[in-house]
Length: 170
Image 1 (cartoon, rainbow, N blue to C red):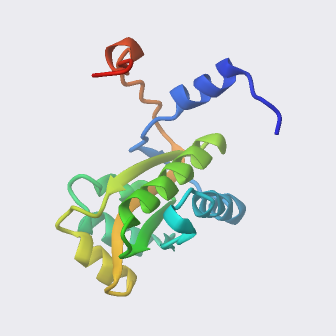
Image 2: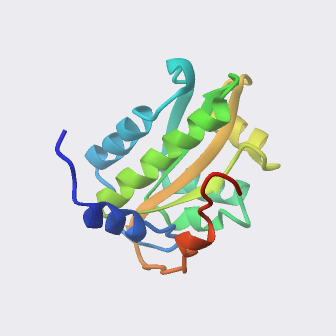
C-alpha cells in the first residue's frame, strides 16, 4: 500500500462535513453501491459483520422516513437517498454499526456527495423505523444517513488538538 501525504489525508478529513441541505438530483446506482460496499468493509468485532443496509430512494418513502425521524432528521426528505443501517443484536453491535456508518460517510465525501448521520439506537423512533423498513426484531437501528448532492458547505469550527490530547495520563 502506498503511503499518502499527511496533508492530503488531513485535508480530506477536515473537508468532510455533515450536510443537511441537498440540491435536486439523483445519486448513481454505482455510487450507492460503492458507499454500501465501503460500509461493509468496516472493522467488526470478531468479524461478525452484523450489519444490514436498507436503501431508500422512493420520494414518498423518503418523506415518510423523514417524518418518522423528525424533527432532527426532517432534512432527509430533501435527500436523493437514505441509507438505514441495522445490526443484529450482538455484543458489539453499536461499535460495529458505528464503524460501518463512519466508512459510509467517508466514502460519500470521497465521491463528492453530501451526507449526514442521523442517530438511531437510543432514539424513541428506533422501533418505528425498524417497522417501516420491515427489519427483524433482533436487529437494532444504528442510524440513518441522508445522501445527496450538497446544497451547502458548512464550516463548523473544530477544537484545537492541543486541548484534547493528554500524554500518559489525563
